Image (cartoon, rainbow, N blue to C red; front, side, top):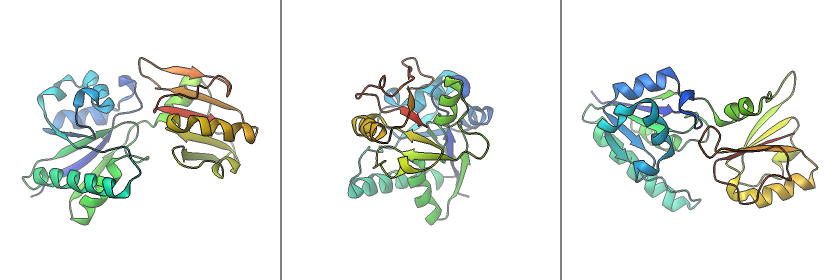
Length: 225
C-alpha cells in the first residue's frame, strides 16, 4: 500500500502558534519534506524544530521550489519534486511537507498535491494558523466585523483593481512589490498597517502607510482599510 502525503502548516512564525495536530503529525512521520535545498535556511523547518527537536532525526527530503513566475521553470521543479515524493510513497512511507502559515492558502504544497492527486495518491492537509490572523492578533485589531467584507490578495501581482474592492484588503507577501503597492495605496487614499516577519525574532510593526519602508522583507503583510 502506498504511503500518505501530508501537507502541514506550521503557522506564521511564532513556534507557539503551531497546532497540537501539526506537532503530533511531525512526530509520527519518518520523512519530512521541505521546499528548500537547505534545511538551515528553510523558515518552516526552523519553526518546527523549536517545538519538535526530534525532527532532526528524521529523513529530510529537499524539494527545490524556486520563487519565479517562469512557467517552464516552475513546471520542471514541481514535476521533479512530485517524482521524489512518489519514490517514498511507493515504498509505503508517509511523507509530511511542512510549510509556513496554513497549507491551503497560497502554499507551494498546492502544486505538489495536484500532481499526486492525478497519480491517485492519498493527500491530506493539516491546517495551520494563517499569517493574516496572527498579524491581526499582533496588532490587537479585528480583521473584519459585521457585514464587512474581507479580501485576501497576493501582492506579488497587480493590486490596483483589488484595492477597489469594498471592505478590508489583506495584501500577502507584499515586500518585493512594496514601492508599487505604496504608490497604489496613496493613489486610492487608503490607510494601511503592516507587520513584517510576524512572530519571528526580527518582527517589525508599521502602523501607518508613511512608516512602511519600500525595501520591506518578503514576509510582509499589509492590512488596508
